Image 1 (tube, rainbow, N blue to C red):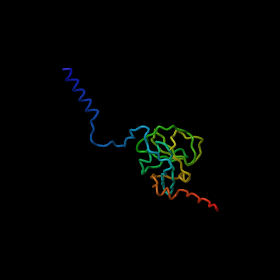
Image 2: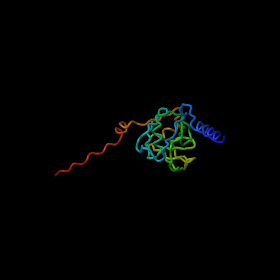
Image 3: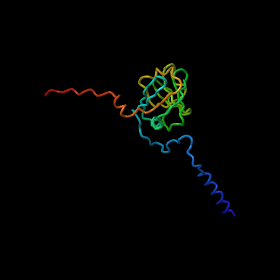
Image 4: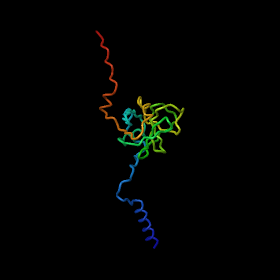
Length: 177
């Protein structure tokens, strides 16, 4: 009798653990391989809000790589305390990076509890209100976001477009012999 009850309980447990409905989860799951990611350092994101367009250069973080894999996305932009614009991600980013409260105008950061992304357009405060994980930086255009509302679009800039926008090396001087 005990063997039958044990077998029945094991069978029920197995069904409970593997009981899939055949429908995918509503939000994608993060990468199951900790530590493994392809760097996107130097890749650019085009951020378009209202009539403002900016480019964010991504850093070599796992969060940046995971964000790049999710793009393109559209969000409703929110203002954060008069110094940053933020968007809520559809799911948390895979990350293990350290957080900071330090920022400069143009910094692009990720706040895991949100899960939110923010771009800082003003240096009104000495530090961020919450700790963030740096994901990238916009060299210009961030300060123009102060009055952007509504929808913001983020997309990876195609590699060929990045190459045409990159500074060209100066010609080497010729030496007379």
